[in-house]
Length: 340
Length: 219
Image 1: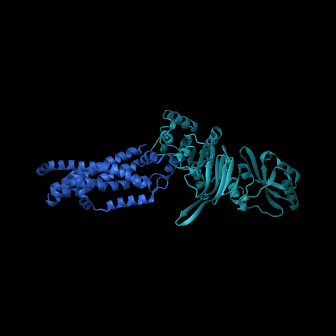
Image 2: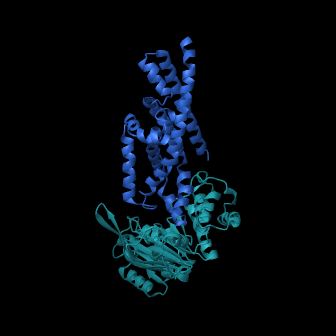
Image 3: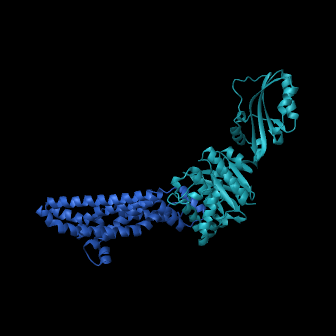
């Protein structure tokens, strides 16, 4: 168990009013996994992340990282522990007056890294993030993606066990986001570093997380592996996030009545690639047209959605629905947009 | 024209006195004002070293000194200045009061330029395990370099302006020359010459300051 939060609360005082940012929250992140926390702004995810390196102190409860209780640390010991917990930020937070090289050198200086090895360590890190040719550039002359690479190199400098990502790709364009996420995944797989990331984008979760926690109003309302979150979201907030990514909604011109219905089929795992639609056409006396369809690969497992417009005898439509319900590996999906 | 050549030695002497006063005062302003500015900043910042009572005391002292009209300050600290410099007049003597006036001014300018350093950079440094001392020397000061340079420029110009009053204690300097010859004796030529000299000096200081600031931007 890499990170264990037990019963943590965080209360701020804002103009004499108490604001509960975290409400008796417990969470365990396993060693070596990528754990994603998704939530809207104000859900408390940023506070939660900052408890893990004690940038914020919990009001109550305990936080431990790789067996060390953080609350018991202060001064030099806390600083030593923090070197083992890297962090990257949405706004990169590089020292603008220092070159890329000096930015990384700074954290090595902080950990009193063996002087002889500083140069080779920085070169190694720059090679890892693909910025070997930018050592002497200033952050002001780098693109967002390059800045985040420097941020990653800096966070990894002291061989951390854990990497915290604070909306690390939210300031980047979609293409750059993908390459940064790939880099993070590579770091996780090759260096075995546990990653905790917070985001408001389901796309990020889908791309790299192993497990995910959904946060709202200071609580984790749902926690599970990423595939289940996408295939069977439980909480209304989760459904909202999943719906966002599929963007399925019933076209307004379609009339819904006994002889005309919209059925969305969800294909799980290997069934996503099987040809059920053929059977529907063959066995049922209905007019079936496809409104929308998509297969997502989540952790390399396919998850398919197919939205069909079915017209015909009411009886036949009912039979078709029953067929879907009885078939293994496919199910009728709710259109989440309507449930929110 | 003849009058102008007559006052040249006077002007030259005054220029040396002003240079001496400004040099001594800016030296102490930076030496004491920079740490004071750092203290003012870190004792107010919850991420660094927040000690609210200490911050309030330091802030109050700074404000009190800055509230004094310079002429009153000069008179008020005369005994201290006499004890420190072992004299009762002259540019070195006047430098004590000038330094005391310049220290809180510079400290506040330093504090203001630190306030411009992003919270995120400080947070990242703490997350990286940096000590307070390292954050001050390697993050705050380099990040606020431009502001600090501008602060030094501004403080020097303020000291030059204050130094005109230094004549009260026989401090000398160009400002003093302007008041004694130009104002009291209705000596228009000297008055104009000194004012022109002051304008040139202030312009020069500002130009050099701007140049140094711009050079730091160049990266």
